[in-house]
Amino acid sequence: MEINASAQSLLSQIRDYQSKIESAKSGADFRTALAPAIEEVEQTTAPIAFSERLSQAFTGAIEDVNSLQMTSADSQKEFQMGGDIPLTEVVMNMQKASLAFEATVQVRNKVLTAYQEIINMPV
Image (cartoon, rainbow, N blue to C red; front, side, top):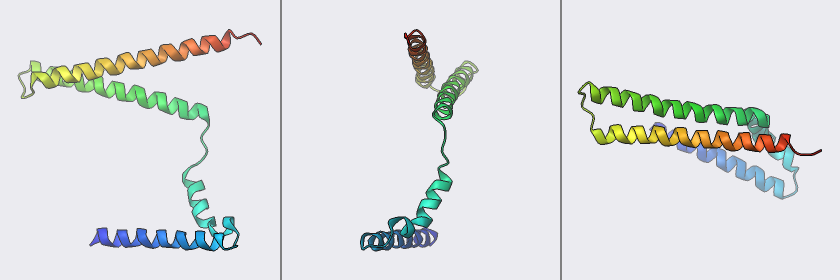
């Protein structure tokens, strides 16, 4: 029942936006017709500087690599303690962690190389 109510709510919002778009096409001011929707989008997507987004991306990648390494270590420990985990899963977790770490190191190396090239550019 809740799914039907939320679907109806979503459908009514879509129809509302469609009617606002049609009224904007027929000559009404586009910004005025869609002002509530534009304000909602502007409030939910605050502008973030490029450096902050880059920092967040790197932090997220490092956290993902750390998570894979922790999963690998946990599965190795469980296997060594005689737990109910197949060896293939342990090896797959180890390979995932290894590949993720190697990829992260390669990205770091590329970023450092690019940084060094930019620093050494003649002005």
